[in-house]
Image (cartoon, rainbow, N blue to C red; front, side):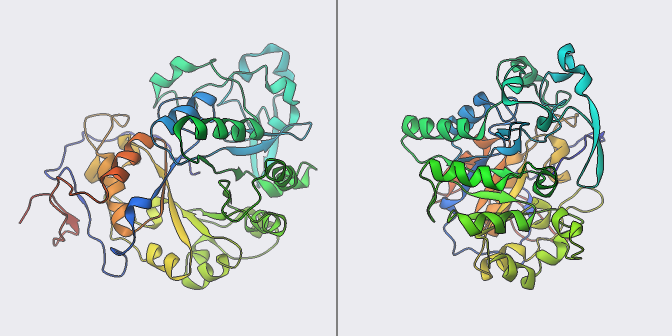
Length: 388
């Protein structure tokens, strides 16, 4: 999912309306949908509370109410799928502190970009298991650094096993939401992702239309390969700019913006059941950081027969629209609950979140009166609680 760089914020002054949210255009809101069924997806587990993609992160996500947990898949040298945000692992493991692996630091071209560091495809699984996970955003989530060194790198199979155990423990079906990372790149170096993913899903008896495994990718060709061999639901992830790398490599000019138009959504519906855009594609953010007017993307997706899950919800000020920031620091937490409420009013089907506890709280509100005054539209395009 998208990375957002930390920026220095001006002094943050709370607005009068704690529940402030953008006014939804009539064409965007879908009040008839059952909002209590929104899916809470623990983004890399509970990444706001534990180092991402670790057993502790996934366990806590489900304890906090996550319906699905998300592992990003990359391969090892011996072609085992492991769970890391990227194949470059200097920011998510202690590999840079291991002198025995110092010589493996290198520069590679991944999806057309030069990347320097240590890469999973240069390590066997046994070697990766000697490493320990660390917090990827220590400047933002310093408290998570307490858990540095506590967890190993997990395999995809281990995440499936964990989901089975957590399903029994909590008496509900815990979904697994794997993403194929850089699939065109890995196929080009002889370590394709789809074949071992397909084999693993089948060997676990999960190849069915109602499977608790939902496969996602930013690259359509990866999903189409999976669709030829598996019956599991598929999720087309969508970026905020540019185009999928597989399309660029093939000379196809289709952009993410094209894919989010009605005709593009119709094409996605031919192979996938979900789309997953950045939340700013549903509610844009203005140049000053404030919320803009919602788009028709949610309604358009539903008209195409697609469900829509938006990413990535985070509670820190620097990831929130101007109206919802609180306190003095970019890393202080703002009114994240209001952001979930605004998107659920639009009718989204899933939240991809670093804080599944917050998302689960908003999900639990559905079907009972909310204590806040319902947002209304004003000339400035911002709804403020309690204003008449």
